[in-house]
Image (cartoon, rainbow, N blue to C red):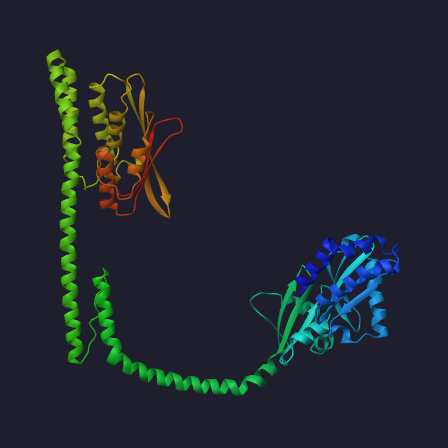
Length: 510
């Protein structure tokens, strides 16, 4: 209601042409000229006035002084004392500074308690008033167990006699301003709520003695009914549990195990042969299902493992041939020392490649492999390549998938063929914590041409299969998925200044 009255005042103040006409010229217009705007304004306020409120229009010279009030406002009857009281309200607003307008104010006397809001345009005022006593009376009809009282920061505004009779002070009422818990005081339950935008609060006061007198019979009947219902419930539950719930529980437990749960089917003692037969049949079904799932999972893993091994070896066939060709050229040139170094690095690489690709290796072993591969390609390439390693030494004994670094080094070497550019490959490895768990973070980057849009799209696919290009990265992603399930993260992107970047998060295992 207060929001509606505020909105009415704002509309009247800002958009009503009749109000604007009288706001500056009321004393200059003739009675004939004022008839129509005054009629329109009277009609407007009479249509918007609430039952417990009034809308009052006046100016400083009192040439405009009319109002409309609801049937409950100040008793609902226009008397001379009421007219004089309205004039007192007018005088109160005229004395208010500009800052006191457009706000709600509590205004009270020994007889009345009002809430008022006024807007001024020129010397014309529109004032909306709410009779707080009438408002409470209208909205609490039929409620005898609760007394309501409006209050401000200075005093209790309504139902003052009851509050004083119960010995409740304004401070006690204000103390009960909490959205959750009422305040207990001298046989009363007090709940208050203060509205800062209107400058008043509303308090509900309920007598504990009144509560008991109204609810004593209901409480006794409720307790009796509750005891009867509990007794019936226990009897019915015991019966249903024996006839229906027990076999349903057995079926539910078996279904959970069939769905993959590790919960063991409860072996409760049961005298009925039918229930024992149900339990035995369900246990046999669960065991058969678990056995079939294990066999199927094992076969699937074997097939996928073999496929990964195949692709891993397939991707390196050309590299092996190139290494052998390089060794032949070195022997032709008589570069025996260089040939020995390459044979040593190549043998280490072969040993590492034929390692089971689903078994984890230490980070130190992976770094050694990356350096062996780096030595091989350094001896076999004309264009320069720099390998830069920044590794937290405390992580060297942590276990990672094989070829997790070498794969990207090989990819960088293979797809950056510009012999005029000094190629750099940076490896940064450190430890971080995510969601309270330790992870190893690998940041791999080169300064080459970067990933193509087609390659990025392929690598970012969650279910991407082995492709014609970048088979090694696809293979690595699949292996990490088999090893870590979903407990890892990998991302691919291009740096702003050029170059392919890869970011990998792996669970820290030692």
